[in-house]
Image 1 (cartoon, helix red, strand yellow):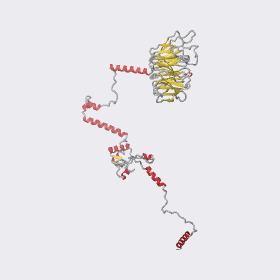
Image 2: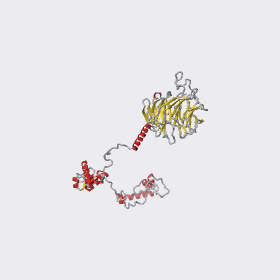
Image 3: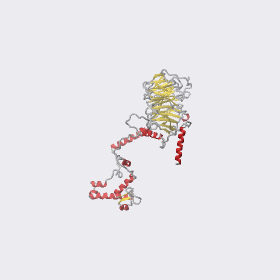
Image 4: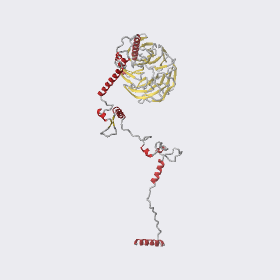
Length: 573
């Protein structure tokens, strides 16, 4: 009561103070809600999330918000599956027709128990407890000692086989007359004594061959012999003919000795303008020509008529010697460093190493495949090492002192066309019919650089620039491409020589000794000259009827060039 009284007195006091003129203005207290305070930010986020997580209706054309990846790829909600009638059954199903339980038994074990049950009447029960895990005829199980059809003891198997055999024989004997069985003319005897075609060996060997069989055997032996002979290359007697006046002059110098006064007149090369001389001694086309190293006073030519000839350039201009040792066209020729010996590669699968002066064959090599290119290692201390690019995609390396194959470089996917030594002869570049270039470390049969682009064509001829920094590759899409010989062997896209037509021909590409000009033959018998710096065509000469396959610049006389063609002529310009 006292409290109520106090409360009332306070109220009256307040009224009195409010009513007095000097009183302070009334204080307004803030209204309070009885409900607890709620943070509505989460509510707003939840609503937004529901909107975002809702899958997009596939029919609607406009989406008014940025949908998430999950919304875009959410499955289209449609009518329920026809087999899922009610939700309860759906929860238990893992197959459209119901619930399929995983089997805990291996298929082999199942087959074993299945067949054992059908044979013996008992089988192992996988669902039974440890103690009694067999079902079926337990008496038979005890007598068989629990064996299954897959683990019958070996002696048991043998015994059963013998039993079966005797049963079969008894069955046959029961149905047959004894006299018939003993008479070889009857079917009963045949049935009893029948053997498989593989049983035992023939009763007696046929000793006499008929005339026809003899003829066939002889023919077969001859063919086999021919094949064995052709495997290593056809053998031909090596012959040589000297056409000069004498092999040694009054001072005792050999006919291959270079002239004393032969030296380069100046360092500047000029493009030839007119024909100086023509050599015609080959009866068929000429496939390659090579000047004598360093001096160029002789020129060696490889003919499709199987002969190799050497011609005098400096004096008489006549044929000096003919080398005959191949039975088919000669594909490639290569001098050693001093010119005293040279290599020839023929389509008869032989590689021969000749003495230039005497015409004797020093050694012969063959793998049974056609050699497309032959090269000696240019180092003076490795002149006994021969490399040959073969038709079976390999580059074979021989030691000519021993005649043994010392290495095989086997990575190309087509016949090997060229071998070019670079980088002080430590490496060499090969090109092939597989339209690729591969760079090898000498002596190591692992490719260190593989160049193959979709636009590349086969490159049947490659030549090294005199400054050793560039390779010119004759590409079969009628252009000459330039590659660097430095570490990366990159294509120089700024230098490209075109205009000639070489598609289908392995026309040789070459440089002038000062490196200022690039030259190449072409399929129409012309010889083309380009300026190295500007890549422009400098001059073309009509050299041959048909293909001009080879072109070589004279090593000393700066304005003279030799060309050869399939018309059988060698021309000096």
